[in-house]
Length: 340
Image 1 (cartoon, rainbow, N blue to C red):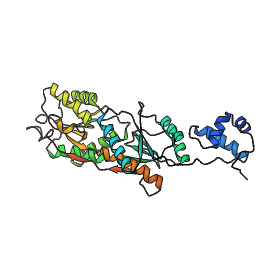
Image 2 (cartoon, rainbow, N blue to C red):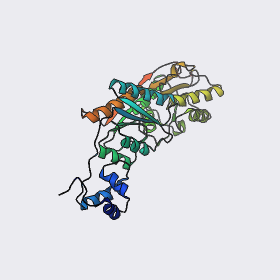
Image 3 (tube, rainbow, N blue to C red):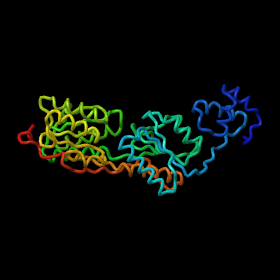
Image 4 (cartoon, rainbow, N blue to C red):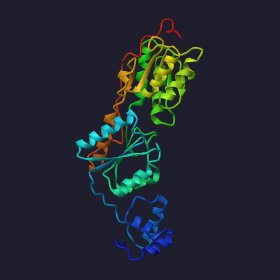
């Protein structure tokens, strides 16, 4: 029968598994900072000697770990603000990590598990397989907000209805008579950028307007991409009368380019953004945009962590509704352009 206390020296197990004694101790005590292949090899050696791996104890810390890549951007600041507000309502503290790599959050996961945490909220980044295994073994919940890639099966996530938002933005421009509608899309390795572009295409198809690939500029979210995209689009033999920018920052860059080219918004070109950042109403002209419930996304992620830990029910993939906010940057198609 397996015992909870090793009767065989750990050095013997370490020799069989080809690892150090401290590594065997980590596996024995269910520490998180061991790779999945090494953990499996050591666990097999322990089992051969009738030694049971001790389950990792989940002690309540009243702390939630939140990871963000860029705290300077208004988008991320709004999500973090919502997470902090949600944690406060639940009587929890937030440990905030600001890290440079948008994709690699696995070291952060292991550090939080070693220190102790009630759960983790990762904004955009999905941990690698080893880190996800460590989370599962320690029964520590993780929620990813607006994941850059579609999260693996079984992972909790919170995002916005990006497809619906892209459709609503494009349908609004169609309702104003525009037919030469361009889009400046985000990087297409990101799930939300794919969904917004798909919504744009779907709205055109529903209106029996052919999708013209020349009117699709693929770049990245941000001012530079918006500026470059608008420059290229307006250089076409038949330039667009309207542009759907995939983020408000992208729309800002497009607006700057249009002004350099002597084009008025919305008299010559209508412009729609996505996010509804606090600056959107103060742009000249005020920006029509798709509102993402950014603060609510952060608060919902913390609530999901809490409910997952307390086993009071949760949904794996949560999508919060976007809404179109119409302001002065969109208008009727310029005279003589409706049939293009």
